[in-house]
Image (cartoon, rainbow, N blue to C red; front, side, top):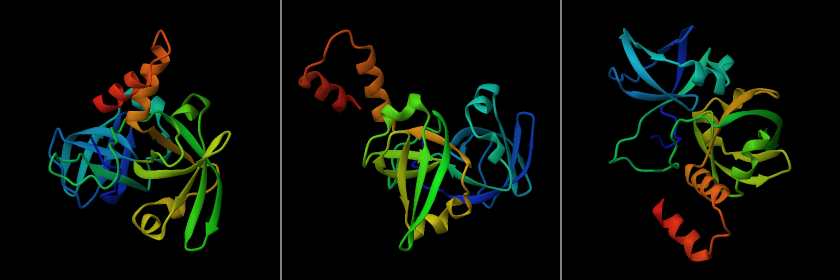
Length: 203
């Protein structure tokens, strides 16, 4: 489990077949979970100032793997004692979006991300979403995209200020919204508000 708050902008040493080698100041242990651009991966090898992670074929098919070069976002798994300043992020990418507009908004930047059709129902105005592993608030939901406002602190601590139009990004929907949507979609009858309230408290 992660918070969506980036620990470090690390560099990719190599990405060959199913092995990703990262150079970073952060030092994990073998078996640790580390999110790379929002993708939960397991450390299997340590080197001098580097660590290596494995990607399954399923993972590679679900993510914007072309961005696993140069600099990447990394975040170690959260501890139970950590503050939750972002939101609950699992590191399980739901789909790939595309940057379709970038515009200045004073010192901030508005960014429009085109969202795959199957994920649009999970995008809630003022709700949470993880883009390339970063916890963000959805300012508005449009017909095919979401609008995000990136404040100066976010731009400084992440790679977003380097993003260009047509860049593909990893999207993870909010886990609570996703879970409730799945329950409601498979429910055999219209639920009462009491039932909806009960399900909400279970999460």
